[in-house]
Structure formats: C-alpha cells, structure tokens
Image 1 (tube, rainbow, N blue to C red):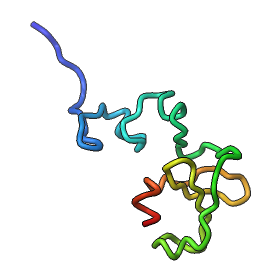
Image 2: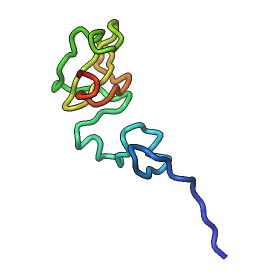
Image 3: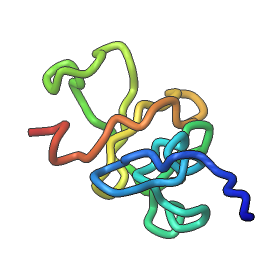
Image 4: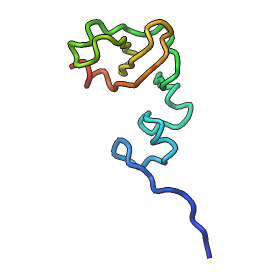
Length: 96
C-alpha cells in the first residue's frame, strides 16, 4: 500500500507548476533561476541597471507611482528605496 502526499499542480503560464512556485508569481521559475535571468521579486531592491518609465498614466499605470523597466520586465517600485512593490509584467505588453 502506498501513500501519496502533495497538492494538485497549479497551471501557471500554460504549464504545470508546483503550488510553492505558483504562489511566488514569477512564472514558475525555480529558486535562483529568476535572479539569474534578471527578474526581481516583491521586496527585492533593484540595482543600478534600470530605466525609469516616464508618464506611466500614458500606459494605463497609476501615474502617482514609480515604475522601472529592467530588461523586459516592468516593476512598480518605492521611489526612495527602489524596493519592488509589484511585478507589472512584460514590457512589450505594458508599454505598447
């Protein structure tokens, strides 16, 4: 007799994603892999390699918030500390 433990995988981005990774909202990236690709998570501080998104209201974003583009991703950040407050999404989808 065998015992099976575990939850049902969650679909994230069209593929099976373990519940622990799905709740991180990082596209089902394993630990460490997201950082290697330049992705940040909520609470991380963005380094010096970013582009400030001017006039965010033009893109349907809150115009009173601060947004940075890092690589192909857009983040809402704390203006003073550069702490990531939210991952907005792929730059191509947000800025077009």
